[in-house]
Image (cartoon, rainbow, N blue to C red):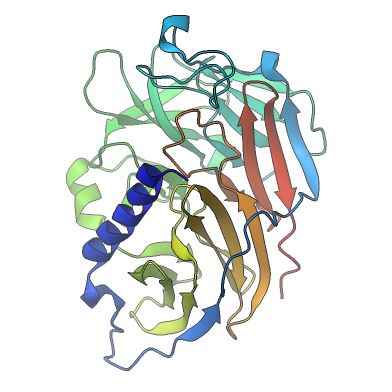
Length: 359
């Protein structure tokens, strides 16, 4: 990880701490929180977990990558592979999701479509779903009843909107959103679509209808909805300590984890949204040291034990400029962990990792 990259992550940590505030981590009853401490010690870089399976793949001819005109690229043989994207924004597959039926959806933004793989058939994609032309697309999520939700900008428009599409790509509706459109897009367990991150802003009702901008702002919260009446609040105490707290509807703490590390850590908001798998909480952290960065995925039990600890390459998604740490990760409906891997030379693969059995 470059110095600029590390500074970006560290600055994000400070922003999260200010945004959440001290009051956000206090229990509603005023009782002291009993933190379960999970010590990661010193991270050992380079010991990456091999996937259990590759569930989707296509070669470089089957997906789009874009890095500007040749005049904008660096000399052949450079560390960026011949294309440094100096004055253009590099584009390639940057988001994916796993449907309830186990199918894999990848946003092929350069070719303006989704690629879809059937469960158990890793290659080639079973079909593609075209998108409306000339959209500036941010993120997407799969909603209930097959609806595709994405944040996108109309040609010439200044702000992103939320778009709802049918499974075949036909536009159902679009609506203004209260956020800047750069947040991750996630579907909550009850069905509402959120702009997700340190602050969670609902963009639809649980039934999938659009919310007005005032309604979105009024319902914004620091707590992530997890289903079963539970919510999550995450705070960082320093670049060596992160905290996760499960609370009920009344704000009472159900479980609380204090993650400590001798290596610098930060929240991996853009990589993986914290998710309940059985009774356990699955979270991802960025760990970094100078020019090296990795994701660490933890499965945290209610007793404080880590029943799974997986280290993954934070640079598995193509990033020629080397300024971000955001390799997309998802938890599928089967409770497994999925990772998007992209490269103009090899194309796209989706790797699957077991997180163990639910209890």
